[in-house]
Length: 253
Ligand code: PEP
Image (tube, rainbow, N blue to C red; front, top):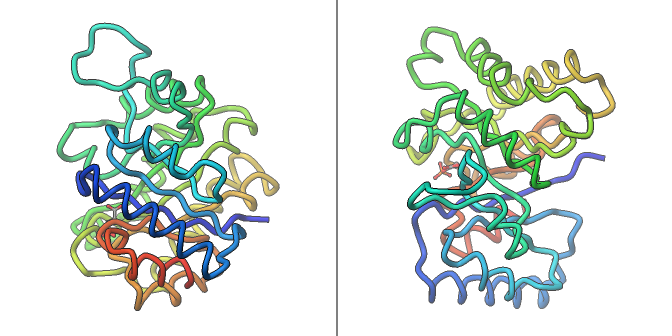
């Protein structure tokens, strides 16, 4: 069965106090409302707070993801954080390929492939983001773009075991942080296409189990509609994950 997953990508938001109090409150609400772990909820806070966050969430159904890792294993790379460092504090999920990393930090598909290899070497589950720009969609190139992004990165993985470590997040760039959301039909069409690419390459079994999430201005009002689509297995949420009330409504959708 595909897992229903909601991921909060906090980006460069929430300081120490905000992070810890959010997580403690969320746990309390999960307990009081008896929200069970059929839905998987993953939070991606900033690097400095992953350790304390992991301690707070110990024994709960909530888990954590890092927002990035370095493509190098270790060594003289000032300012970077390695996969092994994250593993040493109990983190084993990572978001890779986010459009903000591609745009502001020049992460190419080549670099992302290196990050994928390091992440897999250290046993990380990878939330891999793909998606087209507004211009590419205007030119009806969205399918080509998404296919190319996968071919140059994830599709280099040859084993079914490796593929089982991926969650794909389709995030049309024109929808991220803009308040514009893809319609449920647009998103479903793309998700079905993405799944068909995985089926062609890796077969039905692993591809039908793969969670393909939608991301791009999900909020408490549009989540239910998006998540009711057959090939949309949950969401990667930016802005609306920063407020506990909104985020809870999205989880419950
Ligand atoms: C994101 O950055 O992954 C994202 C989906 O952001 P937002 O929900 O704010 O559009």
